[in-house]
Image 1 (cartoon, chains in turn cyan, orange):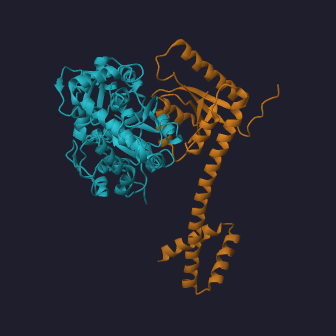
Image 2 (cartoon, helix red, strand yellow; image 1 turned 90 degrees about the vertical axis):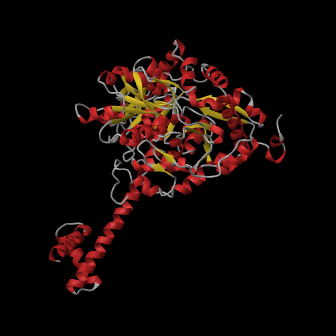
Image 3 (cartoon, one colour; image 1 turned 45 degrees about the horizontal axis):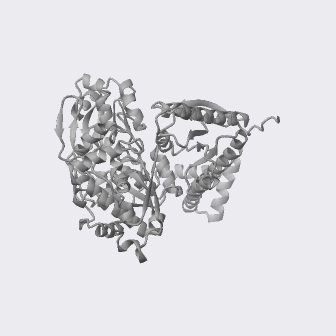
Length: 391
Length: 214
């Protein structure tokens, strides 16, 4: 049932899409789009290519070795605005998931009675030693969420603690060895650290920002401009996969089973399944069913490329001095997030799309982000990187 | 065998050792990695480069790099530690150094595409020792050209600022001393020659005195 969009003037410009992904639970909708044959339904064939680093993923996207990729939302915008790499025009086709990341602290801290941000901040105030925290990429989601969390607790992430980028597969070992005190990363890494008792879950990312954006489906702007039909088909296929995953417990269970394969996430099915179902254990005896777990679809809400989400990352990049110039954030987001293409794909896949381009978010410190007045938002944070004179 | 031609100043290089990422570490993968690293090191040493350190890609890497201050860093393109390096790149972006990606992928088209795309790293084919030097030379030449352009830009800015200083000093001499523009300029030049100062420095002195006297 290859529909009318496969033939004629809507035919995808290329058949095979080279799609990069990282071995994380939230690559699920990309993997399932391929496994369920949803790509072929829309006239494309996904060639999934597992990557080892976000830098490598980025470089391969830029060189054309990959057509599209599972990327950190923040990383995509970092490339667009030229942080640590020459600025290159990028395109964000859709958001892939919400929630489901976590902040893990070491067992050693738990032994000292530290179980959350408040007790962590109190210990830090004592000034007995320097604390170290890790994230996955300097401009990425985990870095921005970690900094936000620390700052919300009154801790200056750039001045009062040491922050490092650590590959996720080294995080638990570093925690256990005492080289660092905590990390922010995705799944299954946070579950692993909790299960092997090197750390405990101090906060789920949805505690910092309920329904925050996650990984995105990104391409270069050049690719999106030259292949609109292929991109539309790609979005539609992934939308259907996302809907399928979130449809039922059975589908989520099946997804965990598929992801556990060495070709994808290469982890235990149980490790992946628990938090996919929203079943949380923090490693210190607390168990709960999370109302805002990792979600791929949420009725078409989780996948919509809200401009306010892209703008949020830029405000945080600016807040921390990664972005050294003021930008017209709304204009940048409007060109990066391909809302028009997304709406067409949503129509094809019969997925409802929100009317608004901006959404309102309330974060853990009570601050509300509406996507309006980004300059005021940036200036409103008491903890930030000092702006250089004349900047 | 001909003695290697030594680069004008010995380049201080740090090589980052990494375990192969992705697939579970098996004997053959580890052996291949070790062989690639050995070939790279031999190639570098034979080309007269100075491998200052061979470091593991652990949490202490940024601190060690900051201490060693190498001219260039080489890392395996498949390494998951490349994100650690990204952290260093951003932290040191005001004093950048070339990062060279090391791969035994011998596809020249892929290398060209990567360089065309403006990635701030270059690909080295790691297997044959004699191929290392030419590629590093190109990488270094390219990097140095970019740095020269940046330096030229900052020189131009400085010159512009100095010209403005001299104009202002001339203005002060004309207003306070009743001189013509040409006379004012000659006065500044005369003082610069007598006191063996730069014109811009004399101008600054004039402006300082003007500030003091109000």
